[in-house]
Image (cartoon, rainbow, N blue to C red; front, top):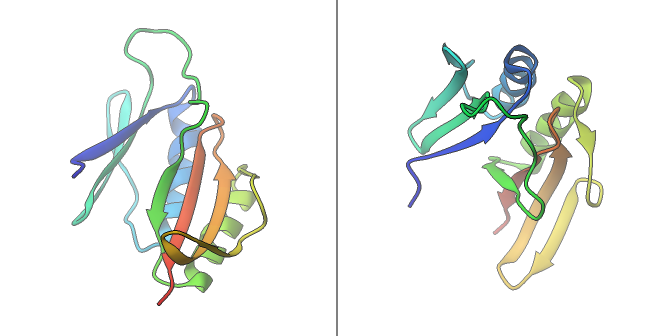
Length: 125
């Protein structure tokens, strides 16, 4: 459904350090820098972080979440730990199992350096 997701940042170098660390726990290679943007390319799609082209500050969406697929609860925990170690802050409930209409999932939530809410999600059988 999606070709890519792009979010804003106010500090591209810090964002690259943060996302290189957290996404490496999911097997994603470090970002490629393209001027005012960085790109993480995978077979499943592209995640990008960019300085706003209008010159205004980047702001986090209220009510928005970007979810990254984790292969296991341990991978989601490693993702969360790497995020905290690189300046992210925890949000929502602590990492763990949640059950809902879409079944049983293991979720870990963070806020990145710019306040964007991100999540590592493992769908359990």
